[in-house]
Length: 199
Image (cartoon, rainbow, N blue to C red; front, side, top):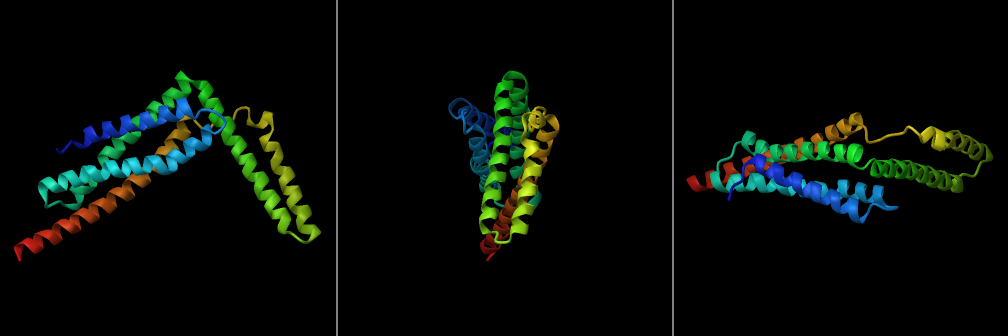
C-alpha cells in the first residue's frame, strides 16, 4: 500500500515522539543528556532514513519510472513534516510542560563540556615535557574554569527557540542530502530497468 508523503510524515512524527517519551520516562536521570545525544545521533537518523526509503520505494514499486524530482520529493516531504512537527512539540514540552527536564538537560550539557575540558587538559598535560608548555596549558585551563561557575552558567540555555531553529537547520541538511541520494538512486535504477525491458 502506497501512503502519501504527509501521512508518512505524521507516522515519523509519532515515532519520534514515542522515542522522545521513552527516553524522558526511562532515562531522565544522570545520563539523560548523553542518552538524548545518542538517540539523536544514531536512532532517529535510522528511523527517518527508513521512512524516506519506504516512501520512495513504495512509490517506485507502483510507478517504475520515477524522475529525480519525484523521488526527492517522496523522500524529503515525510522527513520534513515529521521533523518540524517533532521540533515544535519537543520545544513546547521542554519549555512549557516540564521546564525541570529542560533545566536537567542544560545542567548535564554544561557538565559534559566541563568533563571534556578536564579530560583534554589531563591528556595534554601527560604528554607535555617542557615546563613552559605545561605552564601555558595550566594558564589556559584556569582561564576556562570561570565559564563553568554557577554564576556563569545560571542563564545558559541551549533549548531556546533560536537554538531549536539552529538544530532544525542542521537536520534539514541531513534531509536534503538523503533525499538527493534517494532521488539519484531510484531515478538511475528506474531508467536502467526500463532500458533492459525495451531490449
